[in-house]
Image 1 (tube, one colour):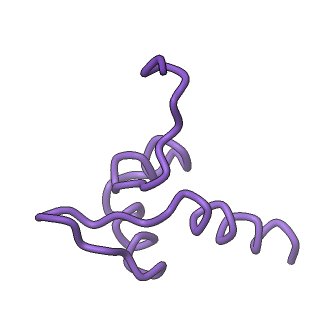
Image 2: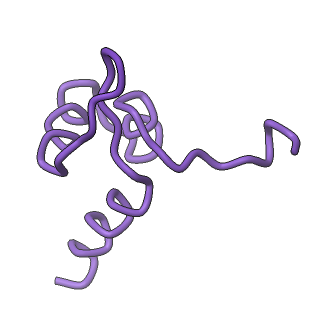
Length: 60
């Protein structure tokens, strides 16, 4: 597989910052609302969890 075509399944704070166009503090706050998993020193959330969280605001 080509690295440019593969999609991450787990997202870190930097990924949330890029996807939602928010700063580090906001991305970290969002991350901790969504029950992240700690792997090593970093926290991650599943991509689907973030997508569900975002769509929950769109449907309100």
